[in-house]
Amino acid sequence: MLEQVELLISTTTPMPENRTERSLELLKTALLLVDDLASQTA
Image (tube, rainbow, N blue to C red):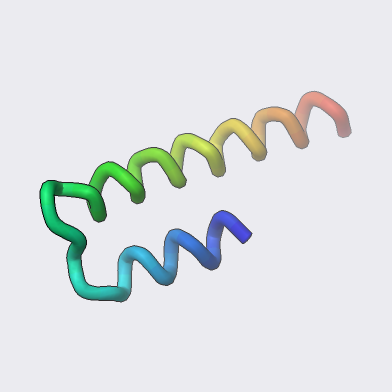
């Protein structure tokens, strides 16, 4: 789901006040956390 949201945000019209870039930063961080948690439980 996070990857789909990242795709949607990165391919739509940029949001005002730098929200697009910040949203992408937060999503990338979330993806890294999910990958890390998955590797710890595997």
